[in-house]
Length: 256
Image (cartoon, rainbow, N blue to C red; front, side):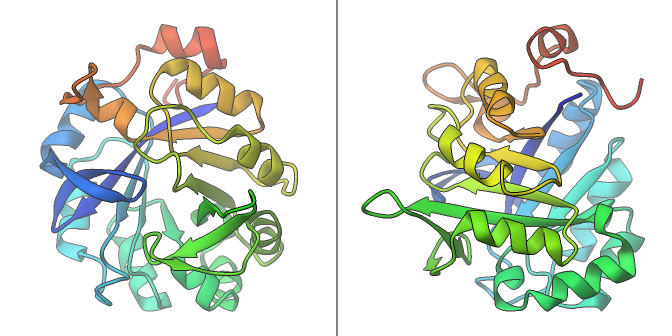
């Protein structure tokens, strides 16, 4: 059974969509978007605040509360989380999973501590990856602005060993291009771990979701595919019909 989820980006309390982690395009109000996804019977959502870490600020707790009050489906939140108290508050607001990205690189032991307190099933480590000259993959932090020397294959394996329950794998190079996922990256990372891998970055048509799962992804997340329509990328919040997903992905809705 494969999971399919929209991945929504928060910036200044609004939703945006990026291309290669840059050129933010305004999408709309997060609450209105959730209402549409409720009607479309989406099973799971991921919200990522793309500025919280760079601005060294806390998560927007008030907005998160408004989101969870409106959201009919399980959701994960990431962005600006650097301590256990903030995690505890976010969970208390109704968020099911917390996504840690930059701080997992800065302080890996935080993942160990968080998973021991809240359970590994609620901890997702997000890994943002870019291909360097020569074809080597490297992990980036701070919304893709800071390179590290970390190899994503080894880093994903390390995160699993210290308690991560899932890996959210983002391709910076493919983000927003709608040209398809980095299948080679997915194959390499998925083969190094046993926990679920959520592939993100590059989906432009439903066949790309299928290609990702065949390459080893346990679940697929997408932004542009579920917020745009047509060659001109007109904003239209959407989600594939269940029958279409079932035919391609052996998809089974979680609420059935």
